[in-house]
Image 1 (cartoon, helix red, strand yellow):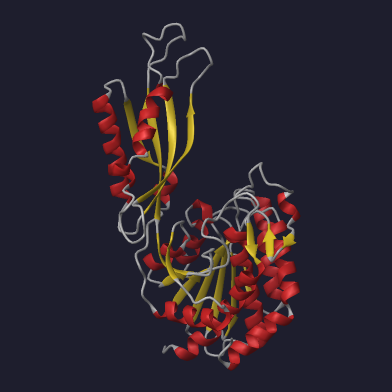
Image 2 (cartoon, rainbow, N blue to C red):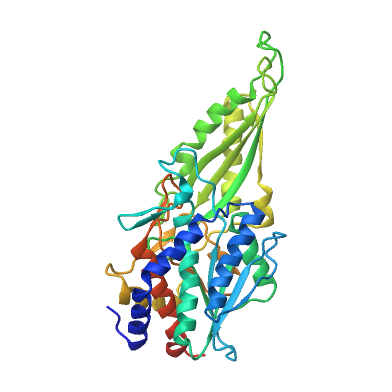
Amino acid sequence: MPGTEVEARISDHVDRRADEMIGFLRTVVATRSLWGDVAQLATMGRILGERMARAGVAVTYPDSGTPGAPNVLAYTGNAASSRRLLFNGHFDVYPPSQSWSFDPFSVPVADGKLFGPGSSDMKGGTTAMVVAATVLADLGLPKNGEVALLAVPNHFEGGEGTRRALDAGLSAEAAIICEPTDLDICSAQRGILYMLVHVRGVSAHTTHTSVGVNAIEKAIPFMQALRSPAFLKPDHDESGPQKILNIAMIEGGLRRCLIPEHCTLTLDVRFSPSTTAAEVLADVRGVIAECARRDPAFKATVEPHETCVRNPRSPMDWIRHPINDALAAAHNAFVTTPVKHACHPAWPDTPVFNERGIPAVTYGPGSKHCYWDDEYVRTDEYLNAIKVYAATAARWFDTRPA
């Protein structure tokens, strides 16, 4: 239960408007802001911005790095203050698969769950922080500082919009990234390395297999080796396996009657905070070398995907900062289950802030697993996140010295 007068005001404000706030989340999830669809992303940004502007929140639309789809950058609270707390989220979502059990964009609400593409990753969190900004504006909070809100259309480009905003001078004492965490506080997270493995063979006609070397077939033992405990290191540290591997794509072959001389594998490796991208790349090269030792006809090279060169997805070791305590206190005021601290298995933009000197953690409604058929976010988690975000911001400047 809320323990302070401010928390009680916030809780009452949200409870009395809960149906409307859930209705707004349905509007957001029903808007098809798919990754890369610039027109829809721009529409989504305006929907979020206009919701805040109607509540008196100051809203701007600066460059995100994606022409035609700007960031949404908003401010509420005491604009004269030199102190600032920042909330961050994205509104680009993955396209739904073909195996949903209903129309993905019909956005039904049933059994306390709101369903739809990106409802968990991360329109639940992004909408919650937007609505929290309107709650703060309605209640005239915070008095002694300013809250900034940054919503970006291109998180899946390696945090491009976030990096652009920070490059342009956005700063804060601390940041909360509102990605889905099951309402755990994630003060550590895995890194990502996307890699392209090029396997080379020798082309020939189907009838001339004694000459040809099938690149796709040569890739099979390599893929099997990547599944070995020696590569994945399943008992690596407190965060679990050193590597979580997805062999995400395979492309190769020219014609059905020709032995393929080339194929490319796209690997997605999520690695422990105690590991580096350079170590992961070296381990893949080691697997290639071992496969070549066993089979001299196996020839392959590996390179990081260009997006990971342009925008590295670094891991984040455990962050210890008062923002953890502030979030935990607000969580425990509204959520019946005690707060837990965790390492996020995916890649929110959180490390980008920490690398720029802004202490940041991740906290939001929805599952850390991010994407699945019939994706949903629990409506009680969404409403509690609104309260937690607003309460953390409202009291941050009163409980923390400048």
